[in-house]
Length: 255
Image (cartoon, rainbow, N blue to C red; front, side, top):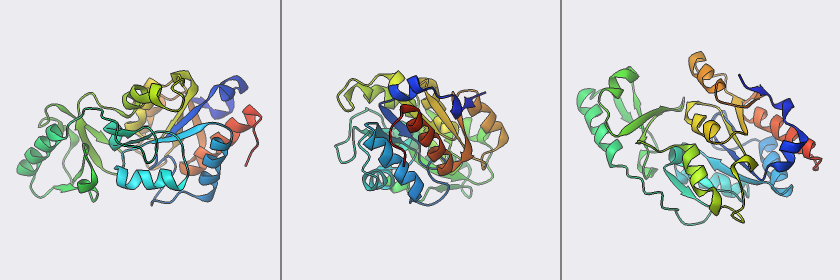
């Protein structure tokens, strides 16, 4: 089980150079606009010399404008690790992934469950990840029909991506290219709320689970096995309380 965020030590807090957060369920409970406290927390991190990045299931069309509005200087990783930019406004970093395996599986789903499969509202904005809904179809039935892809449940929609892709692996892959190129994994703190964030928790030891009370209990149990720290509050409020404490432990100005 994760420890309380109150066990983040001054030594650890001073070591952090990069904070990377999931968005939906971690910074936001709904919608596309972060709260004023979350925005202030991100600004305070940047002012303290800690880069802020995002690693989300969203496509760039919904993720990058959010990063730009917050003046975040860190990486922008979208579609559950399928596509990445080293910073907001930069060109795509070629991770070499393909959408074809997921599209092939989706075609099979539509043939077998023609009235149940619905493409996600941002389906056309996605470059690699295939977002969709499978109304009333058990996951086990989908898994039987999949080859070369993995199925993810973000709590908002289902995602299919090529085998071997994850949020955590993609962040670690580009880490040496971010900022001055001298950021090490133990200088990164990652924040997430759901099963799609487990790879962040396994790839980076300084991980924080932000409470999402909407998740099924069994999914929460699985996530808790991987996270190092845990917020007390939920969604953006949980992110803010951990960042407030982190900055206090660094003796940086609070916000």
